[in-house]
Length: 377
Image 1 (cartoon, rainbow, N blue to C red):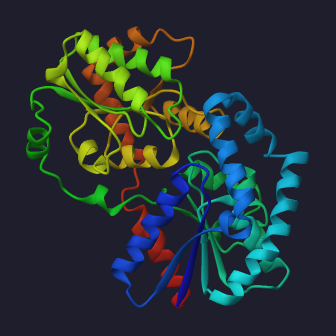
Image 2 (image 1 turned 30 degrees about the vertical axis):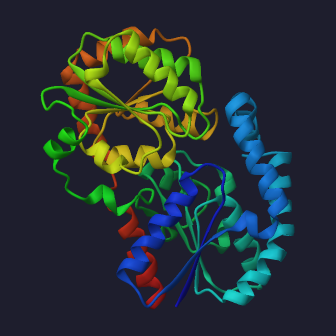
């Protein structure tokens, strides 16, 4: 049995979701041949390089422009242009599919779904097709060619009903959540991890993601970080600067200025996110689909900062409306919001309880079980 998983390098979530699927299948079904492929890079390396660089720069420097593209690609000329270009690229993808002869193609990015559904419509391929939607808000680019898609995996029931309203059969839609690493299912020794980072068991732990893939909103991020550092609440901070040396330097400067070295730990890029979430009481982050899913699986309330206009703002809106997150907007008095939240344990406890409504810690396993069961039958 051969499975291909297509992703595209527009943000890290699509790749990480694909990796989670690959890891589960290679661990539990060694007889299955599974392969991850960046579908955009395969069909046109130059185009992939230019478009991913453009996405990064736009999301970083002119996020409003990315928000407009996101909105316009839902309908109108840009939506049709995207669909037409994907048909052209699909012809090149066909060469790969004829060579690999997959039984199942899983896409964690809409471009993969669009190209494969076009080829299936033209009778060029017969593989089963599955789309894993990696956000908490639907977008119609995911649904192009849906008649030829066999499975849609979505984050929550509201997305399921949106798809049904678009005349997609309920039998194709599975509310499984977004795939996350199996490491979020492990039981961690909280005391041991706190000791490892020289942190206290008697304080609330705040996990602060400040670097991000694009280092967005640097000035505001630093200001919000300083509000957490200077709060009167009994907290300690783990600040992740990511691959962003300037952010790390800013964090260090603030910690030194306020003499808070004893209760703040500053990290660069880390692969210990499951462990760090397991000892945390609150996470401060951008609301990407994957980070959100990981926070929910770890039952963490969220403070949302700097969402990219488009899918991340829609994610933020959805999470806030479900009582899981507080979205700090540009015009907000963030110092007051942070102080109010940290001094209100009942509010934090309610937000934590609300995460159970949307948390899907077994998402990866459930997606794979559906696909493999139906593939065998």
